Image (cartoon, rainbow, N blue to C red):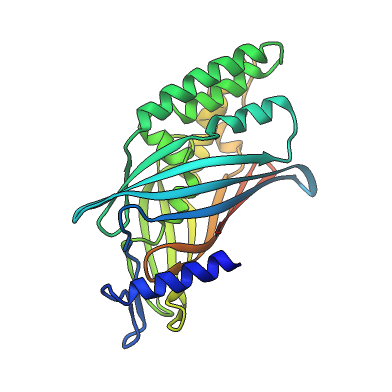
Length: 304
């Protein structure tokens, strides 16, 4: 709590010397990163994954870790940020789960944004890919006796197969953190639109979204933003069906595409962001319904 109070106090003093992003006259907030080289912030991240088959909860997994963010460089055109992951803890105490979590332990991700803090790319994605590939190979050898190890390893490898997949699947907390940066929002005004993004299956998919600046706190120099996203159900079902066909063992039959229930995916995001561009608190909940199974993933990012 003291750490949060100290951050707010320092950030308010800093914001007073910059161009204001919060405009009381028209109740708008432009989310821009006013970050200085050498500046650091630390966050705790907690994630939960729940699967429900009809009415029965079939699995529940909790994970937590620490995230240290440092501004490596600041220019007129962009920022270079370092995200370092540590102190992974999981409710799944199996050796395999521990080793898979350990893939990110100590990992440093170099992120490039534009001058407003909008995500552009992961600079060291090839390094991440090479280190992870080597570690996955060691895990596959270590757990070679497990009946489904090849399928597990193949699934993890796929997430690191290309730069685009790494940026889509492996740094979701980063995308959550920067979701509102670069935009200008008016209190109470709902912004709607469509965009194309990479699905978790590695293919483009249409995304329908709504964004709302729900709260402005002039005294504390921050605002609360909300976003709702819905992926195109037909496109998502087609991609899921193609993946099931690919994974189906030889000789097994798969249902016709027109008999497969539609797959749905919705995401709700709420973030409290300071005038200096640092996220104070953020919670994202993603719900996927597929073949009578509902998967709920929640991630909380909290400044320390």
